[in-house]
Length: 399
Image (cartoon, rainbow, N blue to C red):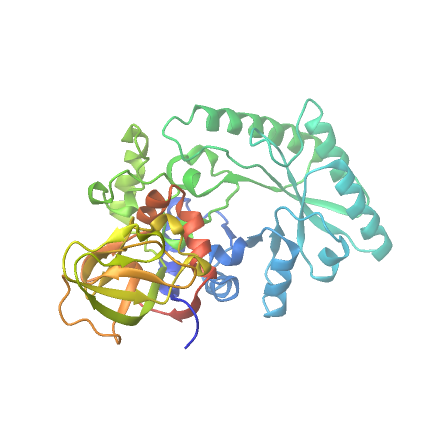
């Protein structure tokens, strides 16, 4: 038996989600973000599926991620968003670097001259994220300076929103204004076309003015919301509506209407775990470390092959449900490194042959990444990357 859970990845759901994005952005080029192993879904099979449906560019965080794609036979354009490592890798693997400083531009220019071949680059602008990118009063001059370096071909200009997921999008509009100002001045100076992109998943859904020349979705390709989860999963609307938590919903009304017309974004990942043992214990039995749960009645306890070593957070101790035979049952006791216990008392006929759904749905019963994120005090991005990377992945094509 392999350790830990199984992640069932529905590639048809990813295709479906991409088609929804393409409709929402009126066939603009899509730069598909597949960093962090495609958010835990597996970068190679996900990238192949996305490329089947016409995405323009793949985006990763580091050159090592791009190398994995190249070694798998993927020859599509790949934008590397953050890595400032060995510039030789970019020429040998035919990658697009994100240039965030003048010094980095110089390094790529020098390597291009040595090799006698140019390299296409995307220059990053810090419009308010405070992380990476050109900023200050000399931004336009520095972009122009980079674009004029020998061997450098400016093919893109981009930035990143810090809070496009909030209902109050005043700062996102401020960021967009700064970026548009730079884009227009650079276009006049450079005199040749390039792709300007800033729209992440949240902006794709609710900020049409930010779609520009291309969009850069991530989490929505995998069927999850870029907006904060509601505090009570039982009160959530359909996940496709992607409403912001604890805020005025009016900002998302337009997308909610679009979603109902276009169809539902589909979560692509289901996490399943095996039952290692079923124990029948009397009332008063402590379960797991620290005796944080003690049975109040004669109980049936299932021991699951998943723990925090597999990405199932300790915050789920006494604080999450799983699905067994179409029924929600609670996690009891502390989540261990390799094991988690659940109360099966109210589910008749369970055997060790039954799969337990940690995240996903069965017979109308759901446990979503948003729900798990809320319970763990985090975001769905972390849930996907943690559970997806800690599981053995299998791929299906199902609607």
